[in-house]
Image (cartoon, rainbow, N blue to C red):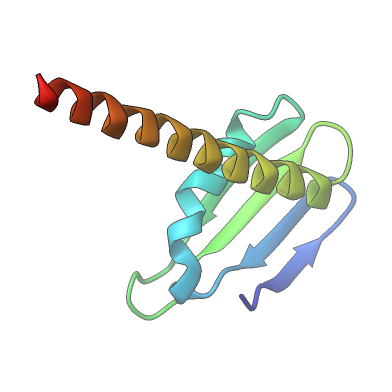
Length: 99
């Protein structure tokens, strides 16, 4: 994944995410907005077919890149949790069909 840092200062960061990776934007934005240390998180995109999306993050405290790393870990943890719950649902479904 080739992320491009557009701007960064003490409390905020703006990153361009390639269109091929844009599926990560909504989970990333959601994880950031649920982080108590994040003041603002949003993505923008001038044109859905022509432009790469940008994710804008501003934090209340700490470093914005640290908030992005926390959000990434949250997404990975949630995906692992989904996999476990999905496996249990499949097993439960198979048991109910054997009756």
